[in-house]
Length: 156
Image (cartoon, rainbow, N blue to C red):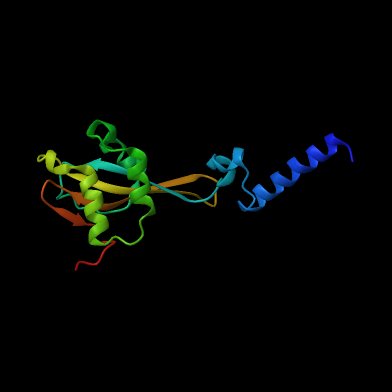
């Protein structure tokens, strides 16, 4: 066997071993969701700047275009957008520790006149090949209070 064939064989073997241990994910595609997760439902997070908590529809799920004028620029408040999005979208069990962790991320006590609504945004393909994006309010934070969405969480 020639040296060239041996080198190609070794490189091919290494590639097969690396790809097989990553469930078929190969580097250029695994980091780009458009290749590895196209069409799958997704979840992210935004924060709404709320002025009126007496609104009847405060806790209702709504389309993203209904809240886009209230979305808070997180960077302005020192909140890392990616960390927040991961926290709000991936947390399944919202116990007191997790809620307080989210609250401390906001440091809302530093903004006593603000009311922020932590909102999970979910998107998915519809049967008509269009994208549906819904905003689901999760928690309302004020300087001294945290209120859970009564439609999602039982009041303890």
